[in-house]
Image (cartoon, rainbow, N blue to C red):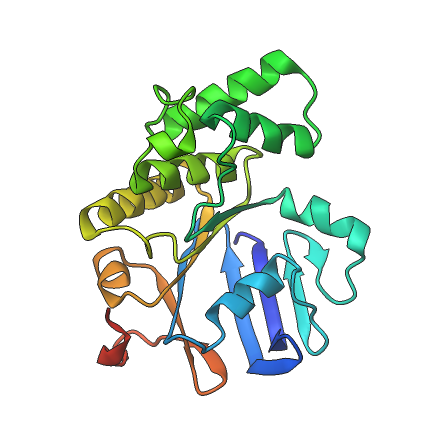
Length: 235
């Protein structure tokens, strides 16, 4: 049985000073594809911020990639984040530099020094997301879907144990979103990289099955096999 990558036990999840989820129990292992779903304001993104140690964990227990979130020291947080690949809804690319330079910046910031090794890794991740011909493009020269593929390539740079994706299809049309979902599910299947994805689009997690955690009424619990999810979730 594989070890847990992410584990919460009776954890209270904060948004600022306010507790938005009480008593979270969650266990995610290598190879899992997990959705965190719910309406706006139910604490989905607060869980993500807790996983990446942006939000503190004061009550309950939490562990991510071998790091305890209980009292994690500031100097430990960059080492935790190197084990995670984070993909945002708004891409968060550096608009003043090329695709290649965006990825090179991240490698340099995470301790890479060998230029040849960096170039090789950039080529590998761009090829993995079907963007190896776009390395010299500027972000504004790419479509939204292409920018999100670059963001996924960036998330893969340090061979993360888990990809954390916060509404990665939220700014994309349905066809482009479908391409991004196919890419994430392929990475999950071929590499065994766990994926934790926040969404409020019911169509996505029905078309691409995975474990589903539902945030509702200050709780977040895993959906039972036949449990019906509130239709109001659909966008």
